[in-house]
Length: 158
Image (cartoon, rainbow, N blue to C red; front, side, top):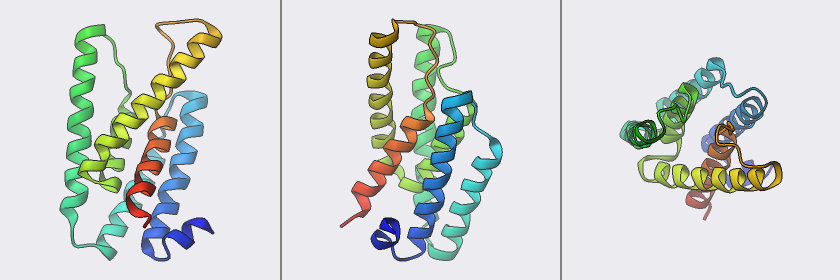
């Protein structure tokens, strides 16, 4: 009901579509550290249909995809050079591309910053409670999901 009140149009349908998928992905990533390709395809199809029906500004989506992937590949490269291990999985890259298409070129930077900050806070809290473990794997999708929804709402609600 809140989504329909905030976005009483096709944008509300897209928001609900993305929100439900992000919720499911967050649960799956938290439990199994996996991101199913079928859910990523479903999210992508929802965005494609939205842009075909509602928008003529395909550059918004394309620039968001390229910016998000470029930024995260840069961070991934730096992490690889320093730690010599994979910091993100392939599903995280796919999700960042989809989120870039959804929130746009500028907002994807805020999503990446906020999600990284939230993940860092969670890692510190978990380390304080359970002890520090350098090899601890932390699912990143819940933080990406929360950050993208917050940034989207901040930028679209009047």
